[in-house]
Amino acid sequence: MQSVSEASAVTHADAAVYPAVRVHDVSVTYRTTFERTPTFKNALVRLGRGERAIKEVHALQDVSFEVPHGATIGIIGANGAGKSTLMRTIAGILPPTKGRIEVHGRVSTLLALGVGFNSALSGRENVVLGGLAAGLNRKEVKERYEEIAAFAELGEFMDLPMRTYSSGMFSRLAFAVAVHMDPDILLIDEALSAGDAKFKQKAAAKMKELVGQAGTMFLVSHALGSVKEMCNDALWLHKGKIMVRGKPDDVIAAYNKFLKVGEDAFTLEDL
Amino acid sequence: MWVLAAFRLPLTRLRPGRMAPARSDGYARTRKGPTRMTATRLDEDFTSSVHVYEPHRAGLPRFAPYFKELWRRRQFASELSRATMHSANTDTVFGQLWLILNPLLLAAVYFVLVTILRSGSSGPEFFVHLVAGLFAYYYFSGAMQAGASSVVGGGRLLLNTSFPRMLLPLSAVRTAFFRFLPTLIVYFPIHLIMGQTVHWEMFAALYFLAALTVFATGMAMFFATLQVYFRDTTTFLPYFVRIWLYLSPVLWYPEDVPERFQSLMVLNPLYSMLGGWGDLLVRGDVPQLSLWVGAAVWAVLALVVGGLFFMSREREFAVRL
Image (cartoon, rainbow over all chains, first blue to last red):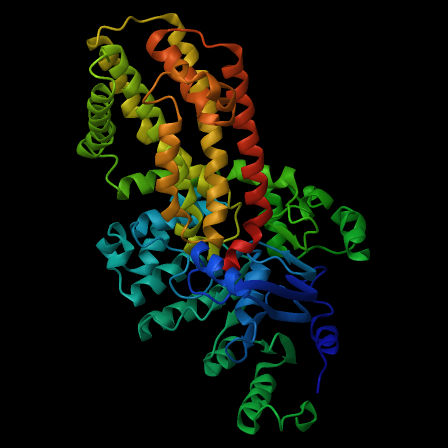
């Protein structure tokens, strides 16, 4: 088995002075409530019973890795492995509890389906708001707007409230916004599952184009085939820890084997 | 820490013979100039080219970059407020008419109520006082209530993008202000029709309006944070708002306060703000110094407490939504 540090030393030693992303010994622990909607009323009731509804989640534990510029890294793992948390931490949405993350480049995020849009507002308004929130100014948003609208192919739906959109239209627009922010680093989390086949091809072509321009891409996906096809680097997370980092084929083979054998019987020496 | 130390040197000194990767270098040049990639750039959150994320000891972000970024993205707050008003049809003629009619009808209801309670002794001046007070009070409660739901309501954007979260309550206050403006315009004809005189002192009422705005902003941030943890905060707020209305000099004049409660009135921030506002705008009376000081103190206090509470918690919002 190739350890993480070796992998980065061998493959990426000369890639760049700074890696695109350097994650150093990062742990993310957060406290969250297991109630669907936390209310003051429930808090009072629980207090009477002496219960607490706070749960500590160890989403990431001592994760370290580096990703060079121009890499496309696939991140795989079971549900709850910490993939989305890792994406959010790199995007600066969740602060790490421990450790340090350096990101060199503009980040654009496309996390979980439908996230990022206000469904009461029109597609156009959401595009503008998303761009402004990401730190562009009005002029820059305006410049990109036509491209985004053309890429998403929504036609007159752009001026309708987004609650009228189908889930495929939602994800098309989300993808179009994310890739047109001129990112150096693009974080994509499970976002392509809802588009139709034609759009998926178009999206894949666009992602290749971005990577071709020395952009870096993180792709979280359960579709191992697309990870194999798109990525030149892969990372397998399990319960908040890195299991294997390396070539997509090797990582996916290890992951598949793990799925077959089951957690108890699996040791990394089997590889 | 050696990493940080190394980055504090400008790029050229660090590795004279080597170039940073073409793409990010290009960005650095177009946006800020390559030589700016020094420690200060590195330590900033939210900036476009280099980010470092580390745990925050005290829970508060560094103020200088935070407010710089807040200012840089102010267009987002105004665009959000504009879009919100658009979706609520506030920007149409009838939408604006409703904004005026609603408090005006309420003023009529209260006028009848208070006239009966006082056995018919209130005149046109009192009606004008009521209208001025209700318009301002509606502005305040609108800003506070919209602010309270701004973070939870904006949750989807919050989960996808990293930006100073304070933009959300600020945007809500801006929306409330633009909903208040038409009522302010309508106030003046009412003032004249009811036979009140115009005085220079009316301009000084803007001081109390400003204090009210700052105070509302602080309260909006405070309740926005609370709403993330307790989703029924906005359910309780209307009762709170109603009681506060009765405790404030809207249905009565500031000098109507019984002697034994007089000293307690400083504890109500709206007593000084709405009291000063009504005195100056309606009657042209210059209020006593305690109202001027009280309004400023409460406004600043609410802004600081609400702002710090919000900022210390805003990093946790993403996991709580």
